Image (cartoon, helix red, strand yellow):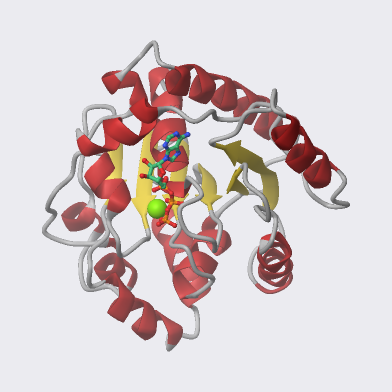
Length: 256
Ligand SMILES: Nc1ncnc2c1ncn2[C@@H]1O[C@H](COP(=O)(O)OP(=O)(O)OP(=O)(O)O)[C@@H](O)[C@H]1O
Ligand SMILES: [Mg+2]
C-alpha cells in the first residue's frame, strides 16, 4: 500500500514558524497540483484556525485512540484536507503516553491514504505527539528564527531524532533547517547562518523566509499566503522553499 510522503515540522522552541511553514508549504504543494493533508498535532489549534477550520466535531487525538473514525475526523477542504486538533489534545497526550505503541499510531492511520504529501504541525514540546509525528514521517523540517541563540535546543531535537531512528523509524531524514523571519543580507543574518552551516550534522535550506506581515495577517483570515497575498514576499519565499523541498526530497530515497 502506498504511503504518502510525510513531513513533520518540528521545533521544541515556541513561535519559530512551525504552523506558518506547515500551512504555506502545504498550500504551495497543493498549488502545484499535489494532494495534500495537513495534520494539527498542537492543542493550541493554530493550524486549524489558520486553515479556516474554526470547529470540528472530532479531533486527531480521538482518531489516534480509536474513539473516532478517519471519516468522522477528516475535514475536507477545497484542495487541502485537515486532521484537526482540539484544546483537549493535551489530556489525550497523557493517554497516548500510556499506549505501548503510541509512536506507531499516526503512521498506521496514514497508511494507504490518497495523498501525495502529509505535513504535520508539531507542538512546541518533545512529548508523545511529537514522537508520533516523527514516527510517521519520512522527513522533518526544523523552522528556526533568525535570532541570536536560535540554534540553542537544536541538539535536543537531533538527539530526539536519533532515538526515534533507533527505536521507531530508521528512515527518518532531515529535509532541512528553515530560517524564518530571516534576512541573509544583514551581517547578523550571515553570522547566524555560518554558525549553523558549521554544525556537523545538519542540512540548511538555502532559501529562507523573510519577515513579512502578510504571513501573520493571512492566518487571521483563515487563508494561506497564496490566497491572502499572492504577490507578497512571503508567497515568493514559500514558493522557493517548496521548490527546494521538492528537489531535496526527490534526490534521497523514500523509505517504504
Ligand atoms: N516570516 C514571518 N513574518 C512575519 N510573521 C511571522 C513569520 N513567520 C511567523 N510569523 C508569525 O509569528 C508567530 C509565530 O509563528 P508560528 O505560529 O508559525 O510559530 P510556531 O512555531 O507554530 O509557534 P508555536 O510554537 O506556538 O506553535 C505567528 O504570529 C506568525 O503569524
Ligand atoms: Mg504552532
